[in-house]
Image (cartoon, rainbow, N blue to C red):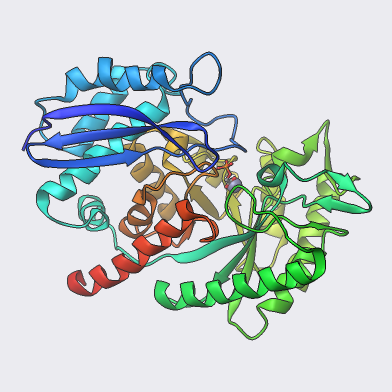
Length: 409
Ligand code: PGA
Ligand code: ZN
């Protein structure tokens, strides 16, 4: 089966910002792939092509329609071959030529098309082509949004502060998505009621979680800990620490912390609360503090690289050698092709790291990330709070996959 048509168009992400959607055909069979976009991006991420206004994506659309399309039309629907061709056509380390958004749109679309042509679910196609053990991921559900994802909140007002950490997540311990999802929904409801009682209407942040302002670093943890008691859940955070780091210091609620003091705070938090993981605990170039945390927290706590590793196989290797993490976020648009995503996952698993597939803060209604998480056998998935449509569809896809799983396993 050959690729017969390829086009791209502008759609809008969950923040109302333009992004790219790629459409591919093989005969009568067609698929679309929407590309997400991050806000608290790592400096070593592959480049997202935007127009000179920093917003438009006509250049990325041109990459697909003028450069990529003529090269892939007539080629077999073979994802790894097409991905290699995309890498060759771009020819740069960080995809600055064609743009990682253009490249990823095509890469995901070709994989979806290959699965559709074979008549199997996308997760199944991914698992088979990678000889991976497909599994249902744990839900790392971000239900309180802080940092850059609640930047509409004042940094400090009347003794209350925008939350320093970007994501406060709950992680149900159950194996089945259907069970975890129901439990998580219940917690979100209770959280909503409790916040409303205390603050009135609380706005939602970029990933659909509540964005309250609190008086202390511990408050959101204590509140969530109270709500999940007896529910068999962990808490988890994405500190996204590069965002509150400046001139050698970390600023949390108008108080400065050295990296050593911040390390002490994380240790205290892991002792006080059942924290499963801490993502990007320090700014992205401070691998030494990351490894101090890996060595400093009790066994079982995951130190997760995101801006640290940016789904880049060579950075994952470098950080594994430095023992700077023991788990890693997998975001396809940080690197650009699925071929490289699979390499990143395989390496990470080889180092004994856990992998967590993740959406971006600017999301579309595309549900590919759910299939990817299952197909590569990721330990977890980050897909935000289902109070926002672009996140909810990812959970609905996981629920569907749970049913499909029965047929194939
Ligand atoms: P981003 O945030 O998509 O805005 O980069 C998500 C994250 O840091 O995990
Ligand atoms: Zn992150």
